[in-house]
Amino acid sequence: MKREIYLDNSATTPLSAVAKAAMTEAMEIYGNPSSLHAAGQAAERMITAAREQLLAALGVRRGQGTFVFTSCGTEATSLALVGSAYAKTRRDATRILTTDSEHPSVGRVLDRLAEDGFEVVRIPTRGGVLDMDALTAALDKKIFLASFMLVNNETGAWYDVKEAFRRVKAKYPEAITHCDAVQGFLKVPATPAILGADLVTVSGHKLHAPKGVGGLYIASDMIKKKKIVPFLRGGGQESGWRSGTENTVGIAAFGAVAEDMRLRRGEIADKLLSLRAYAEEKLAALEVRINRPTGAYVPYIINVTLPQIKSETMLHHLSGDGIYVSSGSACSSHAAHPSETLLAFGLSAAEADCSLRISLSEYNTEADIDALCASLASGLERLVRIKR
Ligand code: PLP
Image (cartoon, rainbow, N blue to C red; front, side, top):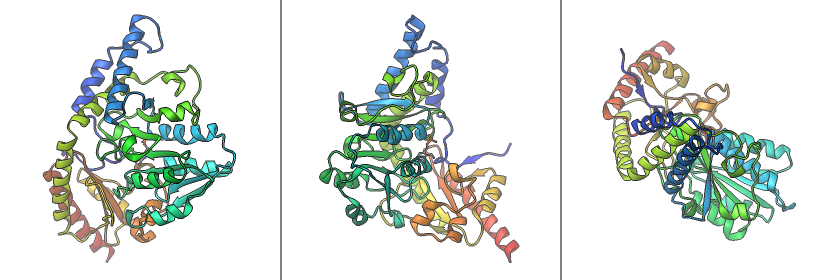
């Protein structure tokens, strides 16, 4: 059987051995965590342990905030954004700051809030850098919320969210700060204290845990001051923050993975840095352009533009060789229009159409990069010839 080489880790990740072991164990714990008998209590204990693992991975101290399990990052962000909009008491606070390159789970929710009367200001991120002057110019007493992503899922740009939130809070301490840390959690420093974030979204399936589990950090102050309310209501699970019977198996795996990655963070980061350096060296020999952000960026996301070959065509060529990459974020891979994020980065529509995302995990090797570059080289040769 042909070996599969998975280089699409920003879309999702294969399950790690740690996740599989935790899931196997959790599958035996069948009780409903809301049930009062011993089987229910065992499930409840498992969730409590996983919550503590997530809070530790987020560097949250006791009393500082809580962690609510959701079904994914998208749901956690909806809880953050819609939940704070529902709770809003300051009638004059109507402005929301965000970037022009957010994931749709932020962007499309804010479109909806704009229909409800909020004024959404999208700060430019040209070259992968958050425009701090534009941010400062947009600060105004009408500020209600600022929602900035930590790491861009398509370009790997690592936005200076810490400085952005510092500027917001320095002038308007009551403004709510939300960070979509789905691509940065456990890979770059993402503690709420470092970021100055009241709300932080994370997701399990980007970290080798299964799909179907994510979560939101909520600062105690947000709860005390009633600045957020739940929107998924029902049986009152997750202390009322997210009704619905919990995905106990997914939650246990997310907790185990968070704990494991927290303890091995330095080792994983070193591995990815060296793999990135190797990939850059190999890609330099090919006729592709690396869309490197001009500011900070993470090693595990590499965006490249091909010479006039549609990314989809190359993606299918690579897939034929058992090599999996992406032509943008997974959620927009069915979209007919060029990626908004790549346009915001500064690419033309034609360049965006010819761009591929290669995303690495600690389980990739130099041999994977060699195979990718060999297939890219043969694809470039064949596809450019066909075009001529
Ligand atoms: N935010 C970012 C930056 C993402 O890359 C993704 C998924 O690709 C999400 C949010 C959504 O996360 P989930 O797939 O868990 O809903």
